[in-house]
Length: 164
Image (cartoon, rainbow, N blue to C red; front, side):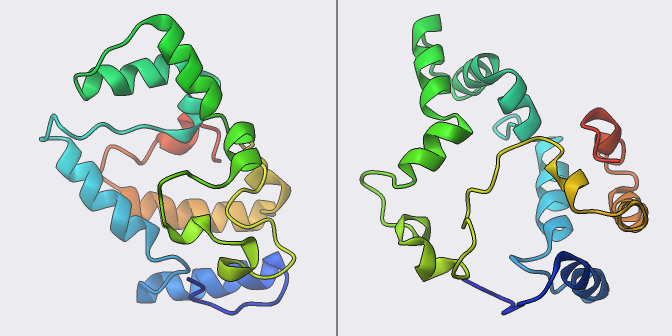
């Protein structure tokens, strides 16, 4: 689902998104409006496990084990390793389709994403945003992030994962 038919450069897209952030109309919804309620709910609900992409990339086997144990389905180390290998970014980008699912992401790239773009799977690299954000854009986004995340327990996540 394309919410914006934007056909310009990153700098213009950034300005458009920053302009919309006050109106709560963001491409693919309002990230803050999705993350904050779930984060707050997770603080008092033991059934919710917060998992961070950076942790999965850096420690995939331990994160698979953490998830399995959280849902009460622990396995042996070899199974964790196999799952971690099957769910790497590279593996998922190569396979793209998920057998048995009829999701929007199981369509040809052109059906969901703008023609000529990499679709849902870009690079899978931690910190790739640094190749796009200028120093000024990063400072502006961090100000919005800090304001939105104030008193949430997430305000310092950028320091942990080098988002700033």
